[in-house]
Image (cartoon, rainbow, N blue to C red; front, side):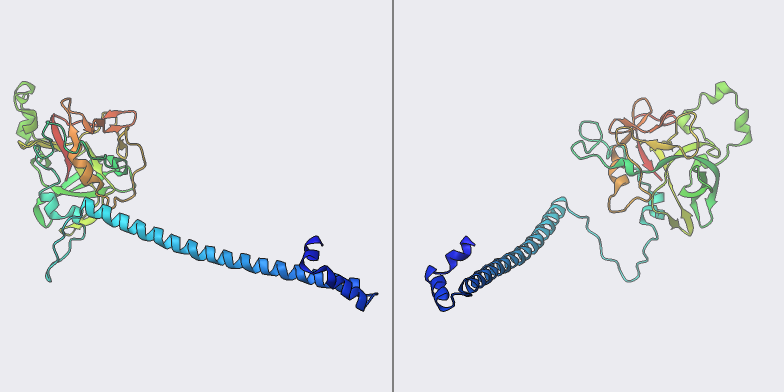
Length: 318
């Protein structure tokens, strides 16, 4: 009660005792207790006001931080630059799947060999950060059948087994190696057949294994659904051939990048442009081995993927 005693003048207690000798002490204790309660109440109200003030300031700080984040994101986006998109005309009919349009299949994502190389002869983009190639779902597939597209003579439809319940349809450019060789060519002697350049010999793809990009967005190409894309090795002088998995591979085996571990996405997001960023640096080296920035494309426990005959070539998908 020392604090309470300091709140009242000592003469107040003497006056109360003089007025009422019996109850003067009790009256003084009553005044002291009420004075303490009033002080505690005022302190509590001040604390509540301070807390409300702090909550308002915290909310303002959060809004300021979010605004700064948006401004920083806009500056970074302007610094990187966004591709210009031409406005669509009234009669424009959008493609169901831009990444698998007929134009892309007739002119696949295979840049010229010179465009894929830098000034020093190596792949471009040495200073760029690597693409998230672990997001790519590359798998071994077996080609079960090849037929011409019903609405486009320059396109082919392949039925591919990818280790799933049912085969997928893959639309691509019709190539000479889709045609079964004439019977008379099978009668050529081995010595005569060996005199032909390997890349000029026609190969029958039905039943063969190849590597497919399986998590691109499915779409229709001239009315036929395409659900994956075939990886091909090519050179600027013309020859091209499907990328081959290592011996012992089976449909459904995943092709991975050991230096870039991770689980592939269920479906690639167009905004990330993973394949578009990775493709210029995917190469076939002098030994015919496929790699990305020196990291081999491998089937775990079975070996690297290779081009059947090409060396020093680029890799694209059709």
